[in-house]
Amino acid sequence: MKPSSLDCRFWGVLLAITLLAAGWRAWRIEAPSLDNDEVWQVLNCETDLAKQVTRHDNFPPLYNWLISFVFEAFGTDQAARWFSLAAGVVTIPVIGVIGRRIAGPAAGLAAAGLLAVSANHVLLSQHGRAYTFFILLVSVMMLLAWRLRTSDRWSDWAAFLAAGWLTVATHYFGGVPLLLFGGMLLAEKRGRGLKRALIAASVLALAGLPLVACLRADLADTGEFHHRVEFDAEAYAFGYLWLITGNTLGPSVSRLRELVSLGEKREAILAMAPWALASVAPVIVLLAAAWRRLRVGDRLWLAVLLVAPPLVVLAATSVVSTGYTYRYVVWMVVPLTVAMGVGAATLRGRPVVAMAAMLLVALGIGATLNRHLDPSYYENDFHAVAALIASRDASDLPPAVLAAPLHYGQGALYGLPDDWLKLAVTAHPGADQDWDDTLAAFAHDAAPRSQVWLVTQWFPGGHPQRALCDELAERIDAELIKRVSSTVMVYRVTIENVR
Picture 1 (cartoon, rainbow, N blue to C red):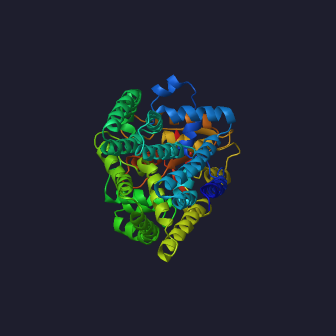
Picture 2 (cartoon, helix red, strand yellow):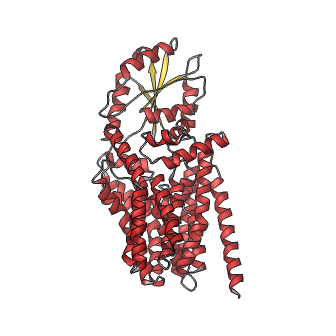
Picture 3 (tube, rainbow, N blue to C red):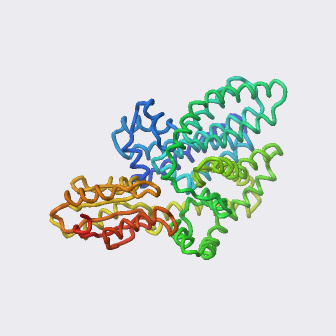
């Protein structure tokens, strides 16, 4: 077969995979209610870049600025989800090209196919936040880094610098893949290539100074409102499991957090163990197959990209007060999927590899179906909250609803009917609460209703905001009606207790 025919076949199959992935991500994309982070995105649109730069929201300004134009152009609060879908879909052919560059067309197509059904990537592609755009930029940076391993052209360095800067301008922890790619390139380069690499690093350092200023402002603003999550062995392992399953196989995340908060960590681990084994075993099979197929240099690069990031994040979070969350390493789905694609491409005549690849595809599809169809995996289902309150409210007037904490409360209230009386109140550890004034004013506005509603976020025991939400509920003698979708607590309160 002629090389041109091989190319046509590769691009044709890659296009088919991409289109199927787009359809899979579009399915039910608007069905779940917007969560509190998505609502914040809607309520804080700002196309003025100067205001974006000076605003404190714990993210660099690029994505928030860009998505504000998307909201303005499309005029719907679902626009950010469709933007995430577009970024996620574009990532698939980029992954395919990376895989082809490393180990040939079959590896590229296998990697694209695995990303197409990745439960984690589908989840993020249906969520109106920055993560799939972040992943797309890292995938472009990875492609350019691999090109620079055999090239010293200024155009390639310029493209790599642009991709790296945009990545960090989208998410501060984009500095981790940039550091790893840049460090490995510096280690490999010699002579003229090393000089150009050092010049590129200097240019990037200067270009990054404005982002450092943004980071300092955001860190100063984090302070008392941030709950620090410590890094431990379980957090390290759970990050990889999340990359594979999207947290929708086995016990729900809320259930696991609840068990741990009750001192039953062993029970949580045992409950998750069979699902973790079923998910991780095929990944290990594919990575082992990839190890045998890869060149020595590619082995080293992929090993660094798959092992080092959580440790680099740990080092960074030991200096600043951000704590650790697996979302900081969400971009690792790129090298992980590429490596698995290389392994899956060796399946011919190897039934174990073929079975591992098919199992991963089945688990990915099953996990996405779980998230959409199994209520035990629902989180922040504010549609269900509205339906519950509407069915239980005894007043002839539209219901009156309090919600806390402030940021979460705004999300919970956003989807409620416009004619309902709504107010979000604070519940932040270490800060002065606004309960005295706001509760009295709310009770005045809610009269002559005999009852109002309180909606709070569920937190596991020991979480500082759990104590505050419980304190608020006790202060107004709230009656728990139901825990909705595992993460929302709905209470009924008599109006006299709010005054």
